[in-house]
Image (cartoon, rainbow, N blue to C red):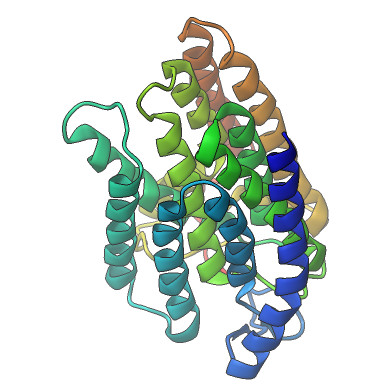
Length: 321
């Protein structure tokens, strides 16, 4: 327990100290997000928040299994390159899949044959893009992933638990600067990093010797960013738009358009994730996998209903931030 306290405190302190440094570097190098018709900020806001979170996560990785830092470092570089020069969509996708292959090599699963690596690669790409899509409001992505990581820290053991705890606590430190009005954004580097970290934690929940109920409960923890991608695919297909072109039809966009304050919409997502985390931890305890499977199915139904009620399956125009 003392080790967990040290990891958590060190990760939080690292993010608190490193984030202002990342802000200064981003401004000096011009890696900033400029105001635009569909962007909420009134002044340029620096990216590179993901670099500060990565340094915080290093605390957990160094305490557990340093090999897990390799895919995180690679995906951070990929995302920062996207922030700086706007990589072509297929280049981004290829890079994300390559990172997924590194995750699959670093995190063995109990899934049979080639199913494990293929599924881990697919999940990595899905969650990278899912977190990137929900990173459209101040506090939203960081707050949601912090709660999800906290859930994984409760479910998992050993090195994966240390990594999850460092991620959650590092995001708490980062959110001090990312609360509305945000002084720094995660950027693609940060959202890619968080998506990959969730993929590592989910793959760890499928690891050898880990109970099946834990792996199923892990699906509940990543359901929101995964659903965000699926809803966007439906919405953009219905509007006959390219799947790689962003829009402003996400549930949080609909809430803000409907009059919700930015922080209120972000906290609605965080609140939903907190509820799912409580459910995930509860259903992972019984010996039977039935409660966890029922919770996963119920979560999927809940998110579909929420998307329908907010009109997030209806075509919309615009671009993501």
